[in-house]
Image 1 (tube, rainbow, N blue to C red):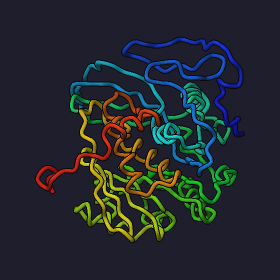
Image 2 (image 1 turned 180 degrees about the vertical axis):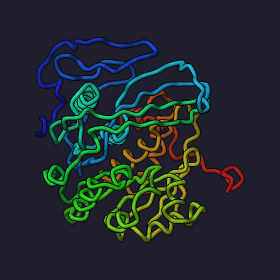
Image 3 (image 1 turned 90 degrees about the vertical axis):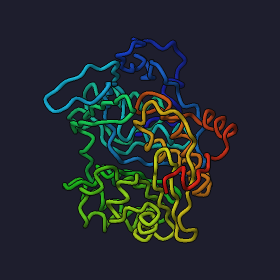
Image 4 (image 1 turned 45 degrees about the vertical axis):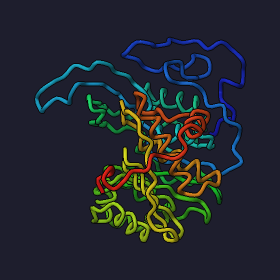
Length: 370
């Protein structure tokens, strides 16, 4: 049941009503009439309908309960949070990043019935994202995220309706040639739904480009599942740890080169290296380092997701992978200077940043530690 392509709050002019939270312990609140998010650090995506490929996102969207702490408590201990907030997270971060970068996005994943599911749907509407399926009976799950004084994150997750995406629902989606399909390692963990997802991914129409982020659970994905999915992947975006896990190689450049051999011909591997930027690996060009933009990070939560979303949006508009990676590095740099899990910039902010900074700072071998 796809809603109109325009934003829901554009269908009828009205004054937005609802509780607006501005304190430290905040929960974003949908407008009582249209579902538009009312709260800090949020504004609607005003993009025109895209003439480029759409992104069909079939990963899970959950709720993040984010708390800032001086340090993560030891087992049996406790800590007080200096601030807390409840926001959509998980796959939502990639969705928002791509949508804010100007890409048309369809959420083809599962979502639940209850307050968490309501919050997810309101946030998707706010970003101008179509929702493909009706809610499942169970509520959407949530993740407790503790962010310490070094901006590092610790997670505890309770799964919910977002993991219940049957093959019948997937087959209702119709990615076309030129479209992108995104999924994440969490959706490929052992289980019936993972097998059904792999079956659907294997049958994608020619020309539909599969984007996979294996996530920190890369080592838990069954080998037989990876053998089915990896040959269909055209964009493999992952962190250094996941690359080492999947390639059995700790040298980042060697790992990226090995992973290129496992994905679809002509595909690209993007190995994200945090403050050191990323590596872009393809058969025809080898491994190309793309340097980062130096910033003072306050919260790294969602930086990798911002990178994936903006990189995919860049490819959809015809950018070559290195150019798209530079844009993704810029988006991630902006994202880590803001608190919260979904802080990827809008296209105007990104263009202004790139106009000012151009490409990331190129480091010497001594600077990078390599």
